[in-house]
Image (cartoon, rainbow, N blue to C red; front, side):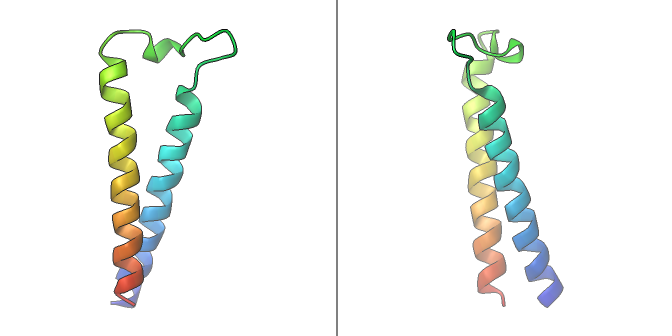
Length: 69
């Protein structure tokens, strides 16, 4: 049971760090131009929910891991 709780915390931290990385990579440059992978129309609809899913699941995994101890 303890290993599963530790694994949830590690998974949550990994998901939050991945979300932070995606936010950092998706930022526009100083000229206001988006990265190449965000220049098609559907990316601006799909990219934010993907980041929010990683944040939500990461926080849920950390809380679950901390409450299971």
